[in-house]
Amino acid sequence: MELRALLGSRRLLITGLAVVVVILAAVVLAARATASTPSAKHFCGTFRTEQDKFNEKYGNKSEHGDLLTSVDRLAGSMSAVLVIWDKLVKVAPEEIAPDVTWIRDTIKGSIQRGAAGDPLGAIVTGMMAADSYKNVQNYIDAN
Image 1 (tube, rainbow, N blue to C red):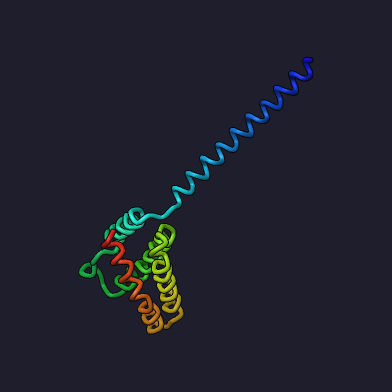
Image 2: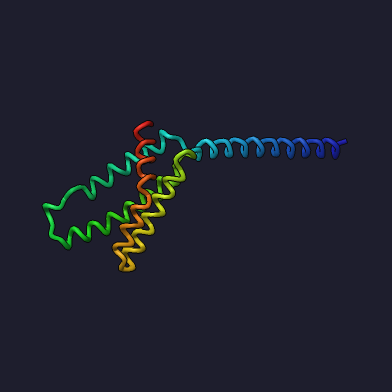
């Protein structure tokens, strides 16, 4: 009798643990789904925060430096712009994600072409996303 009671309580314990694991898994999955669902509010907030940080660091300082300093600042700012658009790709809602990804990809292409000594190619590559920039700006203005 004692063996049956022991086996029964073990089964109950195992069943109880299984239920707890399933419930915890469901809660974690629901929290992750909610946290990772991009929203217009989160995207626009991220855009504005990153824009403010960028402007604070790279704002118009041309009156304080020579040409070499300005070129160095431009190179640093392009890398910073790429980091910003990488962040925006991660939080972009479905309706604007293709434009955000295209902008990030053209920035990356511009940087690569510029580094390869092709400044005209860098400019042309950057201009390829003009419509996407307009779409993103319209999206941010609407939200």
